[in-house]
Length: 247
Image (tube, rainbow, N blue to C red; front, top):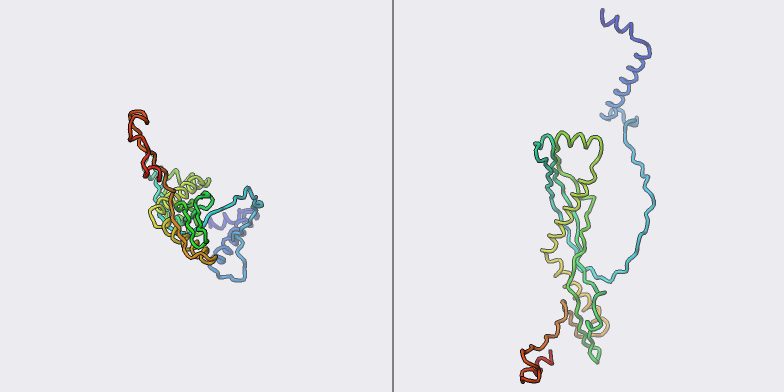
């Protein structure tokens, strides 16, 4: 009897609001359960791309030959703790999988005019190139993702009211640096030099050269003659030896 009297005293507009809410919840549950396939979900999200046009900032001329590329993957375990608070109150630990690639190249733009020598009959060529270098890590956003994240109470509240782009940027920087360090310990540089050597040998052979020598490294510097404590004219050792002149 109490329920009936309370319902009888409920205003008409309140009953209308309750009916609309119940109807909305019913449609939402039926849509989530796919019980009404012909009815579109009114709560479905829709992406709208409002990005501006892409601006070209600069163009650089490249004189590199990329001879090898390595694909890497690293798991970054980043933990942030407060000094005097437990991790359940303030702290965050994130497991992040970073995937990226590093290219190895040989720079042709830094070689001098004396790096290439050709015989008089144009049958023999000798080329000296610098050692291969590594480009910066290029992260793949499609294959980089957060595996798990443990957050304290205050961190959950902060993430609820706003995002934290700084944490994502730090994860990307850590993953890129770890991949870059790992690439230095691999054979990427040696593979790039081998492929560059093969490319130049095939190219020059097709132009009519029969012997093509490709080496890597800085040219040897001339070794100065050893100096003496006395004046150059007071000792026979001050005169340059034939081997010193040849070097």
